[in-house]
Amino acid sequence: MPDRCIPMTEPVRPHVLREYSLIADGERGALIGPDGAISWLCAPRWDSPAVFGGLLGGQGRYAVTPADPWHVWGGYYESGSLIWRSRWVGASRTECREALAMPAEPGRAVVLRRIEAVDGPARVHVVLDVRAAFGRSRMADLSNAGGCWSGRSGPVRFRWSGAVRARPGAHGLAFTLSLPEGGHHDLVLELSDRPFDTGPPDADDAWTATEEAWSTAVPGCEDLVASRDARHAYAVLRGLTAASGGMVAAATTSLPERMEGGRNYDYRYAWIRDQCYAGLAVAAHGPHPLLAGTVQFLTERILADGPDLMPAYTVDGRRIPGERRLRLRGYPGGAARAGNQVAGQFQLDGLGESLELFAAAARLDMLAQEHWRAAATAADAIGKRWQEPDAGIWELDNQHWTHSRLACVSGLRSLAAAAQGPRDGSGHRQAAQWSALADAMLASLADSVHSTGRWQRSPEDPRLDASLLLPVIRGALPPDDPRSRATVRAVADELAEDGYVYRFRHDDRPLHKSEGAFLLCGFWMAQVAQACGDTVGAARFFERSRASCGPAGLYTEEYDVHQRQLRGNLPQAFVHAGMLESAARLSKAPG
Image 1: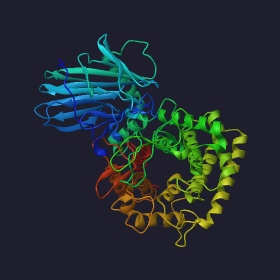
Image 2 (image 1 turned 180 degrees about the vertical axis):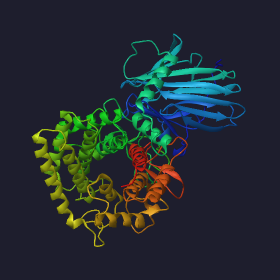
Image 3 (image 1 turned 60 degrees about the horizontal axis):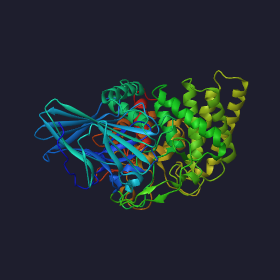
């Protein structure tokens, strides 16, 4: 049973990224550290200010921590879900089952925590300190009635069940909980942008609904290599995807890609390119519900904006706010920022990848007339804008990037092939037009072939780029195309080290001195090797990238090979998509 108030005075401190786990419900996500503290949660929506901002040095946390300081930490996900079990082993074994309740509501988060005394009695400290506006708003209007605490922090209202004996102090509401062996205790925290118009949820009912939601959301992947990890990758993608079909690129902002390298970005938004990568990964396995949502989100954005399609949106389709500095210390080695300047860019490859996704969905008989209209609109946008310079896949300066144009060649050809199916005569006419445009774009790329015979980044930039592997994967060019063969060999020789792959060479320094290995590129290399018939090489690249995560199986964008550390925002959606697509492709016979 609960004891009286126990003060919690230890400051929130950051941990290495591999030690964090994620719980998410599609509308928001939380990171949990090995100390049992939820140190990151933006509520009520992905792009809302954080209410628990300890990850970036801000105020606010929700911690369940063993009272015995002599313990070791572990944890695991329940299969096919983002239901996490924190585990601490000391004089006894204590677990905390954690989840964001599903089905989710966009404006209301429900955090479920069930503390269990598994082996021996349990004694844990519990503290809640809701700090909206990235830590600037203290808890106010506290009341303890009806068996739960309630109050507000700035615009966020909260209600906390199961903590009736908590007492307010300098560091929030706190108490110590003691349980006999085999006992458990439920905590339910609700966070909302509007008043609560019903009573608090029943913990057992909320857990049952969440378990059922996950059981129907994530397919079995027993037919894939690394089936458990592939299924987990799908669960992560589902957890990052809102009811709108929009999927955030990552749950966090400002986690540095390189210590003090000045690359700290806000990825709590839906990138068109990333949406396509995730959708194509799902399509490689089957016609799962996540693919339908991705197609719908892209359809709505393309029909609304046409040739002015932005590279990224909020998950509900709004324009992303510009970047601004936050008054937070930031994760070690980085600076805290919110917002992103990407909305002002033109990224041609996103249009090409959209066509690739529509074609994949068509092959699975998942395109309605509205979706075909969006595909035709995207193809028309390519026709209007393909000769303009764009920011490219890596969002750099505007150039005529080779990858962007090859992505469009592949997308146009894939869509044309799909339109040759059981459609009316207009579909066949459009297919011919799309094929002709693809041929014209490919012919224009003669100035993007390096003197060695491989593709180069752009007519102005002779360097090699791992993104130029994608035409082989997507089918823009066959694996035996001499430019493709030369590019694959060059990437293996110049951008790969010990099974890890880097994006491109920044300068004369060793690759690892300028940035980490790019995990998505490693998964691309695995798929290319498989397409080229090199099953041993495919397995080697796949396993290297697959292992570049922490105990929770979450990937960041980059991996510091020399320090064996995760770098960048967590979890990075397109890396999980790359893992899932690689598993699907490597499970098929090469060729």
